[in-house]
Length: 124
Length: 491
Image (tube, rainbow over all chains, first blue to last red; front, side):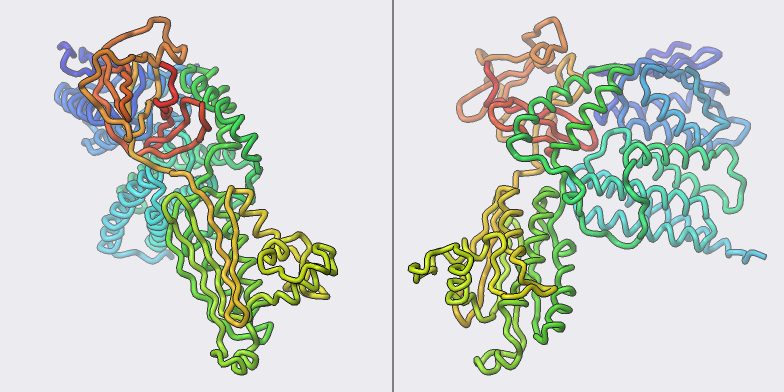
């Protein structure tokens, strides 16, 4: 299954998801208020596809994200809520790859993992 | 044995709590965007109420996060809500975290939720931001913003020289990546905290507190006085608030001690036994104007003249001081009292008023009429704190650029100079010519390279630079950006 339609390409932010047997979701650039709506839509669509395909894990690669403001980060929190609302047997996990050279990534993802330690894994 | 709370009550709490959290989130965004004082009041009230309700209903985890969030908001308020994106993110996460806790079943295990870990994260942010701040001891309604007293005072001339350096520091920080960005963040934030605008609101809550103290003082002096506060809400800096606060304190005390007569004296003069002091404060255009007037005896020129001669401030030959009395009474150490009491007599009050107001660029004047009273007037220029601007995203510039909306977008820009800000700021080797959007004002047109349509947004000033600096730092929502003074650009 191609992921061409599950993508955002903005001036200085890009995100794209590829669904095969696992899901690769890569984000890069600067995520500010201008892309909140696009990111929300993208993740809603991605969530629906993951549930439909009974996938168990998403590899979320944010190593290329230089900046993400609170509104954008809240989209990740909402994503966790969507997963938590699923029946336990349908839930999937998020494995975030972060860049240790970008300190906010570690801080923020550590906080995000507190929302659902069973669903969020953070990998340097 | 714990008392079982009816499920109906718990469900009701959940619904109300989620509504409260919505309002908290909206209010937080409003505060960061426009320093909306009513939003700040609402936020603190909602959060404090939620804290109480959650405790009553057995949601101890919600109560704990509420308490931590109150701590964070206290820190934010102390910084005039000039917080960075990390802090904004932490506040938003705390609100969302509480939402999740509210939704979970009461008494249910915190499956997957790491509450201690979350609290630890908030504590680490607080520890970073307030290493020398004592823990909050009250959880009541908003206290006056008193940042000025805790802030190192930087003379205006030094501030003006440091401001362009701070702007450069911001650009370097905002364009840096990785560990270098974190290191430069400390430099930028250090300068920002030192010379940036510490916002504050001058309002009834900040000044009317002097009413009670004034009435107590009047009683102690055997006088009767009605103190009327007519105070509007105006945005200012913490330094201005501090100066106005000090001035009102001294002028009200001075009016009670020196101006207002005893009830017997007033009755003999045909006045009501109750003296009246009026404090008025509000924004008038680009100025903050405060007046403190009383209907007392007025300043005795004879007493002031005699004391001034004693203190060798004027020559005995100077018989008319009607043009000079104000300067005399504001001299350091000047007092008409022969002995100092715990109220007055040390000659500090009016001097403190004038120096404090001068320090923030303001002026003090006064008029007095024998038997009718004295009126003090304070006028302080206040820079415009928020305005509408065009937000422009330029290639290679990783932060928003803002053009003051006194400039207008125009399609008729052909032939006008075009600036590639990425190249101009040294963030890009290549110099682009297009696509550009054109801005025009007073017959001058300048193009800015951008491939996005500029958006309008409310912008808050964070670091003002004097002419000829071409940029200053502003905040849009919680994101810091650069305001460009196109009129100062050399194109």
